[in-house]
Amino acid sequence: MGSCRHKWEMADIRYGYLVVEGCPKCGGRSSFFSEEPVAPVDEYREGDHFWIYLGSSQAVKFNLKCMKCERVVNLDDMMGLMMSTCNDPQCKVAQIGIKEGKGTIVYVALCADSSHTSGKCVSAKGIKALNEYFNQNIKASGKKIVIVPCDKCCNIDKCEGIVIADTGLTDMY
Amino acid sequence: MKLSELSKKGGLKAINTYKDKEIEGVYISDMVSDVITCTKANVLLITLQTHKSLIAAANLVDVAAVVFVKGKKPAPDLIELANKVGIGLFTTAVDAWTLALKLVELGIK
Image (cartoon, rainbow over all chains, first blue to last red; front, side, top):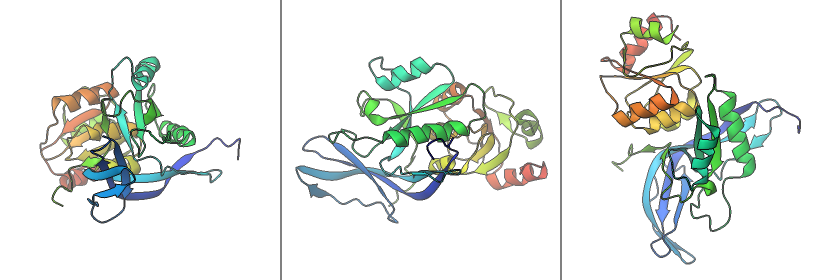
């Protein structure tokens, strides 16, 4: 198992909504994935926070499973992926893009707690498997995908990027 | 079939300068969450979607080129992003179904 050169495939693919909430008291933001037929918009109290619905978009969640050794890497802690377009020289994500050079595009794996008050982000094993998965399938020469956890962003509200989500498709709800 | 040949025979109009890759399949979708789970490398993606997130998703799975159907044209910032990541962009006046039939006729599966 430990020496397996993993060949990853997506597993446990679930379609649903990425719901984003904000707390007006602390300014924090939180997000969760819902598999309800319609995205929940409830406001609720949680400890010192009062979470208010900010928006939602159709999204997908998945895990990665090795086709050779059947190891599964759980990606429940990842809420989505964002293609980085950040060019702030102080931002670690932008620095990685510059260091990797032409042909490499950096994507940020977004966790549920953008403020990272809990100290947690997308797991290191999840990031490693995501990098292996997306790069194993590339056929274009000189092309590389680098995926980093969102705690590398200078500021999640200011770090520029394009989130992969189907925003606006269910606005009629 | 090479992208240039497919473009000529399929009546696709190029929007940017593209790499002449061998097309290995076709996928039709307007949802980016669908693109990252169902599309493979060197696929021709047919869509109505002109949001930049389409390119963010298509690049992640190494899509060769995108065809915007029904004459839709993307904004300059999407074209700029596609140029940066090396994804060819095309447009056609016909709808997705009509284009799919044409591609099957050309032997693309």
